Image (cartoon, rainbow, N blue to C red; front, side):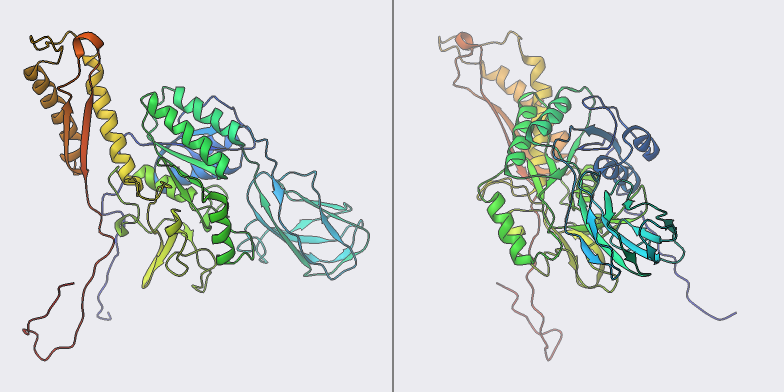
Length: 486
């Protein structure tokens, strides 16, 4: 026996798990399934059986498999047709390929077709490999080989189709193109949010998976404000478009500023950039928005958690670098700028494998208290607790002062304040979600004549360390005093 030190590295020892009642609602398009009618799902096969495929299936399946979440799939109408990006033609034979615009793609793919055996279009014998994920899988000798037969159209199931005119294909010829998924418009998004507001299902977090523009962001913000008015306090994780292939960091940043510079939402964390994310359905690594993973993470942790905390990463099955470690998606550490524009982005850490959230930004206006998602979620929790405790007081007869002012009796007010402050303290301070919380009733409102009284909840949140400043020096003696101020 060779002497050795054996080490087993354990995972899942930090007890990082979704809150017991966590349910992630996902609003997106899908190839099939009901619209406006939904039920909680815990199994990926149930997703496929009901919704077939598409962004809704991918986002929900990731949340189920990677974080053990129960999901509430909300399929929207899709008046924005799926489409194609630029065709990259690597055909050296005489046939000219064109994209068939009548064959609508149903999801975001990076289609690559590589011909194993050449031949003449319309004559049996041509065979090919097919990849949906940019060639990261599907093009190896061990992967399935498909026959074109006598067809002049190569159909990519779910990924459109390519037409070939008369001519030849040479072995190892290759062509590629990206696709976009069908999308919702602002009205269709609003309808999905309305159905979520009206449902009795107790969903706790929201991910909107589909490219937003300023109009759709406004519709999402309005839908969340309507939920707030109805007593359902929620924030959402959503996303802008990904960079197009070949789009530079500077061009993409400028485009995002132009598209969203005049927009704001205290209730939406708007992701930007792209990522390669492992599919929990096909096991391929697709190019997706970071929101697919970030939305699931947000639902899986307690309200006060900063999603950028290293203990809660790296994001499972997510990459922003190629196989050699070179960045091939936006990395805020390497190319800063989007974070300053209020977008939620992904980043790497030197010496650490994996991908993390850079900052859990809310797309709040500059100067807002709601800088990070956790601030919004803690205020939402405070609103929920206060509302629940205040509702039983409605319609109750209360004592007022006997001095003709109609103001609430101070002793009664103190009793109510003590009761509700205690409940808020248990939910926030007792669970280490906030530093302190205080509830107060107005002492100046004329309750007798108006039947109305003002109240206030003031929450001192946790502080989140975003900068650690230190000094390192060579010294003659380890005991020598060191100036660490500043």
